[in-house]
Image (cartoon, rainbow, N blue to C red; front, side):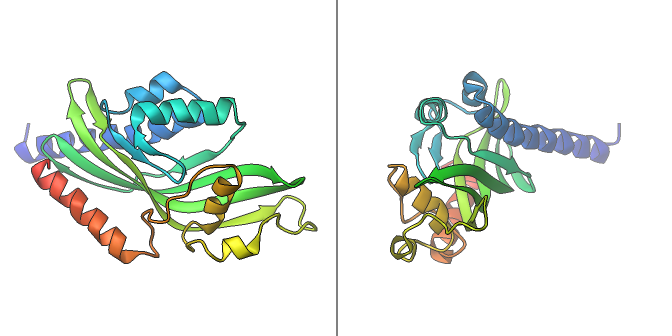
Length: 207
């Protein structure tokens, strides 16, 4: 086989496995496949979302409690778009969409968050596995299912929250979760640059 063709095929297989892994991870989470979700990660991998900051085992446990005991029904669409591979390490970034239907003060509404998901990825004896998970937030909105209703929000609180995830943040606060004001978002290019620089160093050096 032509050496160039072989390299292209290997790159294609790696990309396909990584992109499939990214999609499968979110599917497992949304469909409450907790063993499947855990198996997508290397042990101890860090996970940071709007409501959680810890390792993957804790994320699985907290997600189970959130969905099975607290009634959360949030779902994710994810579209892997770009990746870089360096030996047994890779990074992957994916446009994503989070949506949920909630009821506050007797008013039903839909929540939408436009974001990107970013992961470090490591090749293991079992194939590629996620070595981290992080959201990069862009913008969001709420919409009442009955447009005649006013949104059930406190606008004074909304005004204090960052524009990249203010409505998502409000729903988390309303449900009793702590909100990190320093999440990665397009409205904070300083945080975003530092985040990308750190990921690039890890890709090149593993540190």
